[in-house]
Image (tube, rainbow, N blue to C red; front, side, top):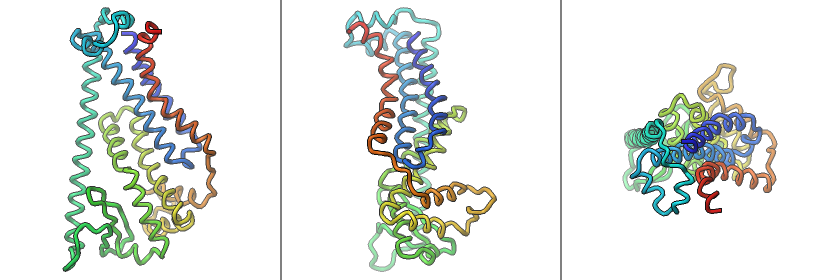
Length: 310
């Protein structure tokens, strides 16, 4: 049971240390796409640790599982893992981790089902509030709604559509509207909805695991920054910042009282501040280092076999 326990310990250390290091990093706001990648690698490493620990614990506890897992391995490799010394906690650990994996899958399915239900509800509301005109083809990418409140959102799905209220059209001028559309299209192109679904499923399924709660919060923040950058590259940082201000100034988000959109002033300030861009070499090093994080538990799991084969 030493190796499964070591993998669990490695997963726990990753779950505790990595979010603290990322919270102190000052580059995440400047490189949100890279930060999204790093967060995904951290969470993947934690999940890989749990999956490998579950597999090895099951192999220790049950001969049938051991035969399937180590079927192609030489006898010396099997002996190196000391699988014959089944401790009392092997079966318990395997069952507990398997239940955690099934619970995670269940929460993800629930999140996707709920998202689809919300999407169907919104599409039904669109049909009522913006019915098709005679001769109009269904499935247009732009839907304009009558509304006194400036608003816009991207309705994902098989036929993604950009929904804009008439108040937003009146308030946003020229390229500002283009920047807003580019921002929402950036979410669709990068499939940010799946990142939000996965992070919400993990956070809801394991509310007492801080790394998953931090993962969800950071995904909500970083996808907006990434979409802001996508819009600003096409239409300019000032234009994108002005579009955010015009769209949200009546919601009280720029006042002293906290609101659910309290991150908007920081987003506007970030767009108006000259960017501190990474060099290509530094970005490549961080990308590669983050990509290696989930590989570490795999290497740890293969250490006994590699010693024998080496």
